[in-house]
Image (cartoon, rainbow, N blue to C red):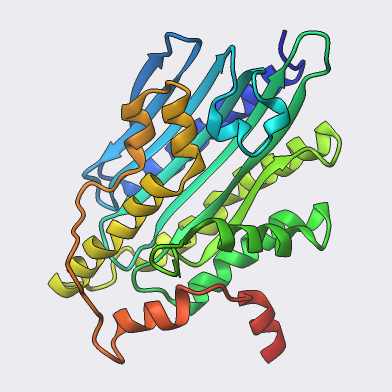
Length: 309
């Protein structure tokens, strides 16, 4: 028996996948998402939707999955050892967008719901999710817009929510082996069950529903910016960091693989073209160097803006 609200969350997530696909395909204008439904032998399944070779998005994917099984995978039970051995349900939507123009940032997000069950005991449930922005040639006003939308989504749930989950995002999307953040952050939350169910679910919806407001204005401002071989080469190089994070550090990737999820869907997040160069360093004072010095660090973006006002 699963949590009585599982179906409610699942319906929202399926609708969110539809909303994101419709809006992003409309913005692209040159390609559509194709759907691939799949089933998991151990229990559950999903529907993967991918857009490729579009006018705006070189590759993007928006996945829905609902998987369940007799034993919580190690990547989930490691953080909550008291839940080891429980059966589980995991339902979520995840998305990643790799734009064609290097001036449009890559972006990722997901919202998810877990239930861990054991006969004779109350189910343990929690929400997780968030979204983050990974620019190659960041524009300060774009970063401020991104964080303003994230903050506004959090405000109804308490003044401390945005600073807490913004900081968690900076800490989570951090490449320890590179000593740099993956991008300029956003929101990240996990194990959320401190509020009652309706409030937690409301927060998940606020995050999921605010993504398009955060991302699409940036896409529209930057999609036609002039770029050449230099910018493209840097985009491909920086995409390598995205791959490194997902394969080395990302808990969602580990959970998917350990739970017997569909590998093709799990690795949908990988960019279509990427390069690594040995010992590469940006030219001092260049736009590429400013990405490292000014943006790939944890900063209180909105606090700095308000302090300067």
